[in-house]
Length: 309
Image 1 (spheres, rainbow, N blue to C red):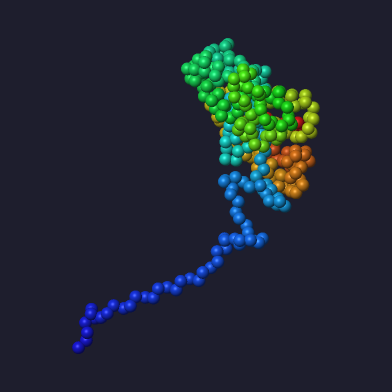
Image 2: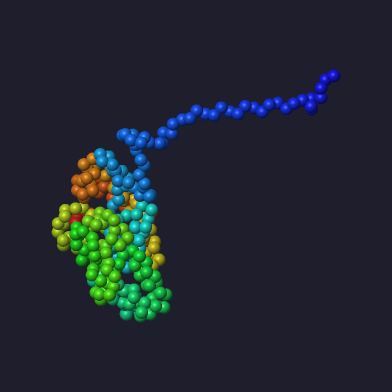
């Protein structure tokens, strides 16, 4: 009689798969010899090129200077934008006025201070409610996180290293903390006291910069592009102008990087040193960049001139 299939013994379990052959891990370096290539710890920062290697042309950054009348509103907003962007730029900033003028209780009563000075504590003690309501104190609080205090363009010694202490003490009173250039945002890259691009925020500031450069006589024989982006002197327009200036800076830097790469080899050294011949390719690209940018920002009339340090 046939057996009941339900009573048949269960088939044996399948044999376990054959383990794969061990393969040497190519990421493990030898203990000695020329094949040891430990990976450097970058911490998110770009590593310098190794000896004999060409530097990455995309890492090149132009150095910028922003200028307005009092170095408090428009130039400082642009300074902040340029130094806190994803592709942050070396940046310094100045004012062209004879004194720093900030709004007061009325149009006929402005607050007037000298450059290389601070005004936050003074305004705070005068009328905190007024100056916080009109945006002056928030503006100065922003500025304190960018640099110690306003600087005057005409007092700038171009080509003199911006290192060490800016002034002895705050306000000359002897009881303030000492200020150093290295604490300014955008300091890295500006230690030599030279920039590639100057961007003013008002036509009269542009005129003052051009007149001052002409009066200096170009002792360094180094080209510098001077732009003016006309921005109304209020907090809202300064924010818009800061974004526009950052976009202009990005396009100029991209054009400079391409021109520098085309020079190649020793041409890059000449480009970095500000040699007029090495930078001719970049100089020719600037009008095209400005025309493209102006189409995107027609509400901000722009001017441009090639000058010399």
